[in-house]
Length: 353
Ligand SMILES: Nc1ncnc2c1ncn2[C@@H]1O[C@H](COP(=O)(O)OP(=O)(O)OP(=O)(O)O)[C@@H](O)[C@H]1O
Image (cartoon, rainbow, N blue to C red):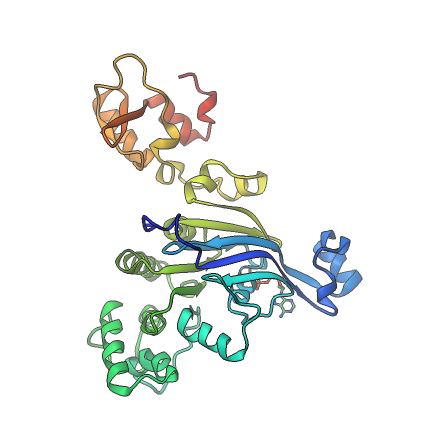
C-alpha cells in the first residue's frame, strides 16, 4: 500500500523521546529513576501515571501507520499528543519538519483544522444538520465560501459511497453510514494526514470490515498518510503498512505486519501474534532458500510479495519448488518444506536447504 517514494521523502510526523505523564509534578518523571518503577509503584509514590514513555518513531509520507496495543497501553494519549490535544510532558514532535511543541494557539488551530484531521469513534456529527452540511462543517469553520464547500462536500459524500443520502440527518443513518460521514468530513478539508482513533470499534463486524475496505480503497486512490489506532490485531494487519505495538506506554516493536509476525521482538509480541494465520501475512521472500543446480530455470515463477498461502497452492499444483523472481532474476526458491516451516513458525534458517 505504501507509495513508492515513501521511504525516501521526509516523514510527515517525526516523534522523538516523547513522554506523557499524568499527575502532580509530572515533568519531574521523564528520565528520572522513578520512571522505571512499575505503574502501581509509581502511582503509589508520586500519584503519577506514565501513559507514553520515551517513544520515538516517524510516520512516512503516504503510509498507513497503525498504533496497536491493549486497552490502557497509551495509544490514544500518544496520538492526541501529535496535535497537542493532549499536551506532552517531554520530547519532540515535528510535522513536515516544523516543531509542533513550539506552535502558538493559532498555529495549533491550523494544524488541527487543515493538516491533521481526526476521525473519532463517536463520529462527532451535528444531529440537526444534514449529511451534506455535516461534511461541509470543517470547511465552514475554515471560512470556505458556501458554494465551494457544498461542492467539495458533495464530492466527498460521493467518494465515501453516500450519494443520495445528502439530505438525511445523522439519526436517519446506520452506524456505518454515520462513520462514513465522519470520514467524508475529515477528507473534505484535504488534510496532509488523517488520524483515526479506533473509528470502527463500535461497529458490528461486517460493517467494520466494509469500513476497513473503504479505508484501504481511499488510501489506494489518494495515497493520503494515515495514523490509525486500534486494539484489534487483525485490523492492524489488514490496514497497516507499519504497526507500532505499544505496551505500558512503550513501543515494543515497530515494523511491517510481516516483520511483526515473522520476527517478533520479544516474548510479549510473540504471544500477541501467536494465533495469526502466518501464511496470510508472510511472503515468499521470508520462506525462500537459494536455488540449487537447475532450479533457477524450471517451475512456476512467483513475485517476492506473494503470500505463503498462495505459494502453497502453486507448489502443490506443480509438485516441485517454485522460483521467486524479481526483474527477471531468480532470487531463490520455495519448496513444500520451507513453506510448511513458515506456517509452523519454525525459523527457516534452521531448516536444511
Ligand atoms: N486524563 C488522564 N489522567 C490520568 N490518567 C490518564 C488520563 N488519560 C489516560 N490516562 C491513563 O494513561 C494510560 C494510557 O491511556 P490511553 O487512553 O492512552 O490508553 P489506550 O491504549 O488508548 O486505551 P484504550 O484502548 O482503552 O482507549 C492509562 O493507564 C490511563 O488510565
